[in-house]
Length: 219
Image (cartoon, one colour):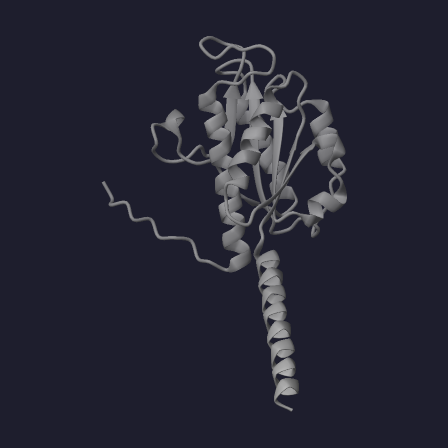
């Protein structure tokens, strides 16, 4: 009888451990923040920024990231996501036709309501309409009922404040002019910071963690 009891206890113990592990995995999956980075790139610059944004998002524990060109981004991808980051080149201070066409096909309210949204852009010139393009993209995300998150402080801003409209890169004007899709490291770090910030905020939203208080003293 003793041997039988031991076998029962051993099997019960194994089942309990397996159940505990399964529940832990389910809990972690429930809290995993899902981030979609969707972009259009013709010269490779926006692709390089998108990869940097994805790198930043993946640096956050629990983040699941889908990096997709905008023409390959499906409705299911958008509905799956907790956060959507859209990337675009700047054409005449606006997003190009493929981006605008894709946005016009995204599901309307309430499908994307309360998901986090952010944007990044690449433009040739220092005053080439980067912020105008970002504002246009963010305004569209607001139309979908999304919650907008801006960029994070980087070397570009002296380590202070935020990049209010997201991340951007300059690719066609000295000293940042580049070829073959190469983007200056400063801008790539800006993209990484955006991806990390969005993934962190997405985790806060799904875990119910309150925003940390600003500890900076008023000047």
